[in-house]
Length: 258
Image (cartoon, rainbow, N blue to C red; front, side, top):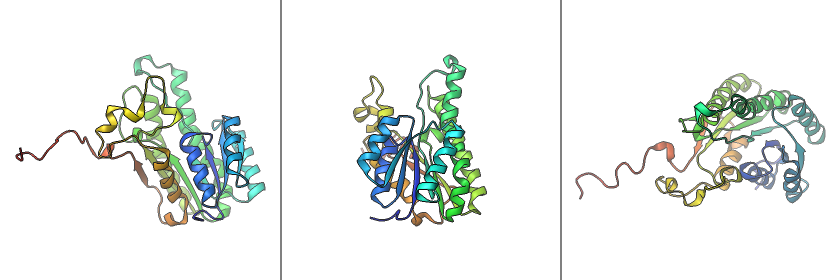
């Protein structure tokens, strides 16, 4: 306990799923946490469940003025921001040749511009803290192509470039920037109609034969937010059950052993 004592964190998309798990864990480890989400009622419920260490704010991550307001209110309430987790995102399926242009752009606006505006908005306050950490939640879709997820995958690749550039620029101001790349994680966003992530054949082919959970991801984000990761920046942490390591089903036994 206490790995984040004295930290002040903004976590976007924190009303449910991975963001909620991160908010609860951060608070349990001593941080003051802003539960930020467009789902204002759900965000309020999460903050109330956490208690005095949390406050909920309604935040559309594509709205720069809203970011300015949230950063100012947080700084006034708890002091300089030390931690930002850009967790908010859209998972959207469609074939490339059928994608509506505006729909594609919306995914990029939330997943990339939202993170950019977050980084831009917290930099001055975070630099004043002297010890900042930004964690951008990308995806294994930011390290490989995914069929019918062209907008999502594009946005997650872009987030890698944004993160590395920010790491170089902001390191001299005492701010670390890293990315986390979850694979298939069981969250409300992935429980779309007709999908039972927990029993999907795909997960049985992984080196770790199960769907991921929010509790697999949150401790990795916690580590990057903590001073334990004080010499870690511009890095990428994959949490995907071994999916990107390769296809576990290629060989089922050692050749020549019968």
